[in-house]
Length: 322
Image (tube, rainbow, N blue to C red; front, side, top):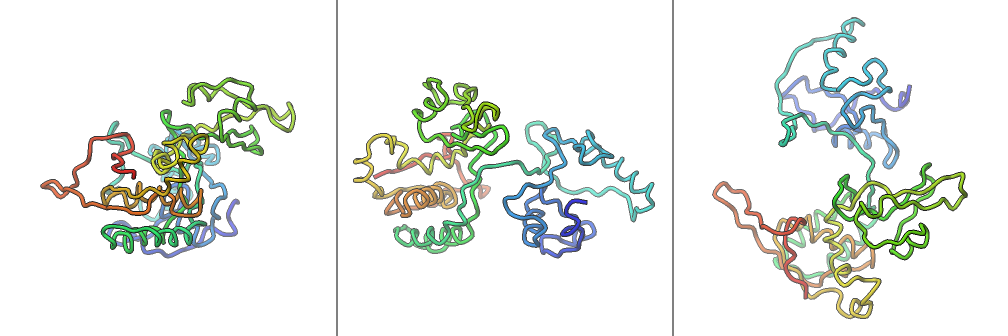
């Protein structure tokens, strides 16, 4: 049985509470953040390795769960309980009312399920991020020295891919067997390798473009991965992208970075401020996005919730670039 040498043992973690249920839960690392964290910490799984995900995109068990394959997971409960009963192993069967995530559009239950994603290895940059943060000036300074510093200290690898149609497509082409991966760093490169003229970079203009395998025709073609970029990746790229660097304005770029200052609300500590710092550190090894930062507070409504700006799809206007 897979994982039998490391799994099927009792672990302890403080996220399990005794105020609901038995205080004992099972861990399925592909179906919950805490499950994944606990299994990773106890070396049941390894970071970066494929997880067992026996549930398909429709929420049904796959053939890996032979007795219940093609059953929707929420409808399989009775069949699973009956299978346990027939084996003479039930302890107790009943119904407990508890909170559960639902889709607000369709009022149907949501299922946590791990999907393949593309990451930036931010954890490898952690020490450099902390060093670069010290080279910037913030008003007020406690946001830099406490809130932002603490966030950087606990930085995780950043999933930059999203399963959507509208967005900036990831410029990654992969072979059918996954052995060849090409990153397009220019339109010119894509045109040269594919032999196709490119005039628009939206998905519906480039997803059909294929690249012959460099290993020979028997290995087929490379195709673009389906994902688009997290829009925060784009906002963090603003200091370089808005002048079309590195394809143009190289001298302008070198003379004017880092910017004199940026200004935004406190809620951008873990948003725009963070992505600016991560990308400048990854690309240039220094705080190339800004010298000074002004962080304003938030206006709250009568119920204590923050007012939100009406602005772009990035979730907030980008205030000042000096």
